Length: 299
Ligand SMILES: Nc1ncnc2c1ncn2[C@@H]1O[C@H](COP(=O)(O)OP(=O)(O)O)[C@@H](O)[C@H]1O
Ligand SMILES: [Mg+2]
Image 1 (cartoon, rainbow, N blue to C red):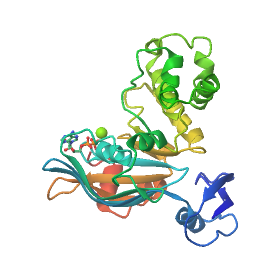
Image 2 (cartoon, helix red, strand yellow; image 1 turned 180 degrees about the vertical axis):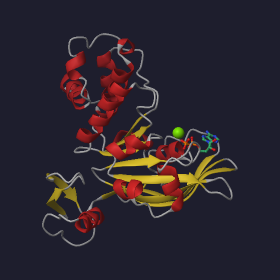
Image 3 (cartoon, rainbow, N blue to C red; image 1 turned 135 degrees about the vertical axis):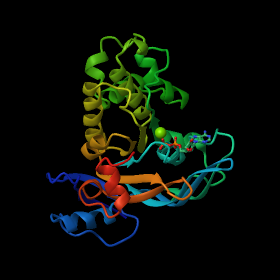
Image 4 (cartoon, helix red, strand yellow; image 1 turned 30 degrees about the horizontal axis):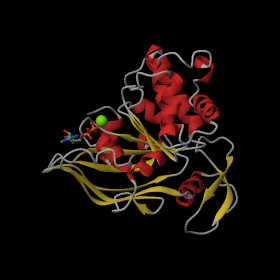
């Protein structure tokens, strides 16, 4: 069932209108206002990823265990936690980026729009097209700005309207005005922050559904970081965003929902400790380990 439904972004500002596909559950009631109503709204949002009892192994080593939570459409979901707790492992599992690592295997399920990402017969190229990824270190190809953005569409045979597609992606990544007169210049001539926005443009040039970002600003200066964070706010109208960050202020600024991962004391395996709306994680977490982490007592 597809219905028109006002989508709140939890900012307390007026909701924007969006089209949301509801797979199950009751027809939503009028625009929610109270905190409880906002919480209820989350439950009515479309679930993009349904992660069920996920464990991840690299050979004998278990890097992540028993992780279950939903990721909702058109929200920014942050994954935070101390180094080595499995944040990158987790986010890379969502679009099968870990497949090439020898010994990599999962237990449990990653459902994407209800389909198991790890089913045999799933087309990995299609998975990566729908679920784009941006890495910690900007990694543009040593090609022109234009060719970086045109690269994936060309690979997929999307040749008609290519110039418009490149422009659209660069505009969405808030880079167009800075590069429109130098599209043939090398991408490597751009600043670090511009290179990272170029990588975002490259990822969205094939119109994915989800953007995964693994510490996208950790190699950038504060000004470039701010522009990436601002971009998150505009991009989420169109995309579902999952961002790994070790910067708690960043999570608090950009994320609607936050998942806190940590290492299980007994066996030092990463696991999900708490998942809630960002405000709850930072102001009134349920778990003492979350509280200790967000108040800077460890990590
Ligand atoms: N390719 C790999 N092979 C073996 N172990 C790995 C690999 N990548 C990560 N790990 C291990 O998995 C655990 C989680 O790592 P990672 O997901 O990178 O954590 P984070 O991103 O939270 O710092 C760590 O113990 C790390 O050493
Ligand atoms: Mg990492």
